[in-house]
Image (cartoon, rainbow, N blue to C red; front, side, top):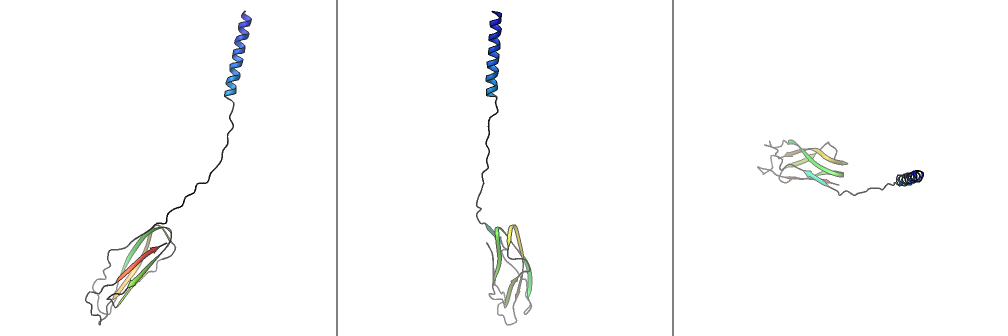
Amino acid sequence: MKRTALIAVIMVVALFGVAVYANAAPTTASTGSVAVTATTNPKVEITIPTGIDLGVLEPGTANTVVKKIEGKSNRSATMTAVVTTGTFTNLTATTVDATTGLRGGSIAVNYSVSGMASYDNPNDNPAGSIVFTLAQ
C-alpha cells in the first residue's frame, strides 16, 4: 500500500509537472510594421504694422523708415509689396532680404519704405498704401 501510494504521488507530480510545463511552453510571436501618414493643411499668416509714418517731409526730399513684416508659413512662401503712390509724388517699399522660399514660424522681412512729396505736390498730408502679401 505504501508503494501504491508512493507511485500515485509520483504519477500526480509527474502529470502536474507535464501540465505546468505544457502551459509554460514559449509562445510563438509575429511582428510587423505599418506606415503612418498624414497630410498637413497649408497655413500662412502675416503680421503688418497698423500704419507707417514717414514723419515731416521736406519738399523734394524723401524720408525713409524700415519696417519689419513678419509671418509664418508651413510651406515655401513668397512675400510681396504692392505700392499705391496715392498723393505722394513718390512712394516705394524695397528690401534686400530674401522674399522667396520663406518657410517657418518666424519669417521676417525688413522693408525700407520711402516717400517724397515734390514742391508741386498740392497735398499737405500725402497718403498712399502698401499691400504686403505672404503667399504659398
